[in-house]
Image 1 (cartoon, rainbow over the protein chains, first blue to last red):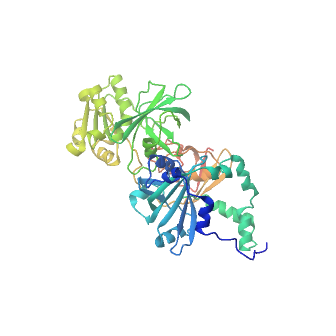
Image 2: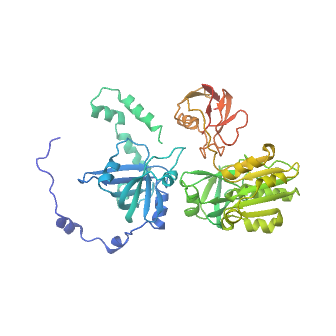
Image 3: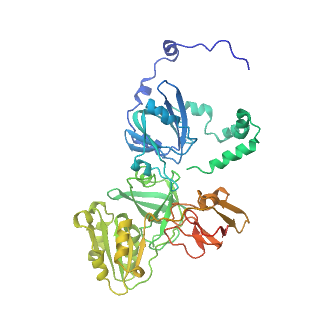
Length: 209
Length: 302
């Protein structure tokens, strides 16, 4: 593919506003500054979220977090705790939080079109009473992220409707993808058998905690 | 599994609710005092609760659940999110704490440990066997069914709020025990340890909620030969037998994963299991969630 000689046009905030207009009053009002009983219910049934952070220079990062529904604990109506399960040990989120404590969370419930957004400030903890609530399969995480909630609101379901995210037929898309082994072998430029890489990844998936 | 419908959810003490689970498709499986069931909660967690209703009632089960301050999501779910009318899958009743015939019973219950004792006391009273209960808890308000027990059994029930009255003197209870009388105790670890210290081992039957912390030799890898399929499954040191079998495609049930509930019982054909469960596996059986092998090879009936 050829590189375009110019970047796509950048709009000013005023131009964006001119195109989108003002949000409806109801949309503004649905933001609350705490986790109410409805949001607590949502979090108790959510097995997955994305965690957005950024460093001091504004370099942003978004990482997936998942476990059994309710794996994120509501400590009180202004505080959440997210367990840090073993992942790839690229501690981008923690490095970012050390410089910039702003976090954005997007909670999903399989089958549900609306999502829950929670924004606030985060910091790492090793508080035993918090970690004890996150114990699974006789192991507990060594760290958790505490989120002090600044705002929480339901996000409407249009994007999930358009994307057919929960339509079982959509899962056929995954069959179109080359295997992770093939992608990794190509990206690393190695001549290792992609099957070996895929197998190694599958092996690592056997240990989830 | 049996399908039930959540009936009344009723607050029966501070931080304790009782749940009625009605059979969705006819009578529920029978049970004996001391039995428990697994509840498969909507948040994918499975939790064990003693049946505390009437075994003669085949239409519904009753359990009582304390909201654990450090809940990992089981008791919290039941207290905050479970709603009447929802369907809930429950296991067949299992009993690791059966009430054996005796000429006299002394029951000891601590807090929510009253649940398996309730049907035991009822059964003893119905059969005319002398029985008494010492029921302790931090405060009267935190003790479910205390008033009901007092009104039904009168002086045969002693209610002790330990914060005001201190702990009962188990040594004195043991000294006053009639010959032949048998003790059944259910409650938190420290209470059971005190009971074990006071009462002769052969006369005390105890049930724990959580496993006692014990130490074992470091895990070693072993192999599990599945006798029926002929397949050999490698169990690495950092993986449980249950997980290894599950990953190899064997559908072994699981529950607490702590060696307490007994869901993952499998039959051992050959080799020497290292039992790490808190139940006491019967001969030829083991609980795959925590137990491992003393021999390099176990042959299991799968």
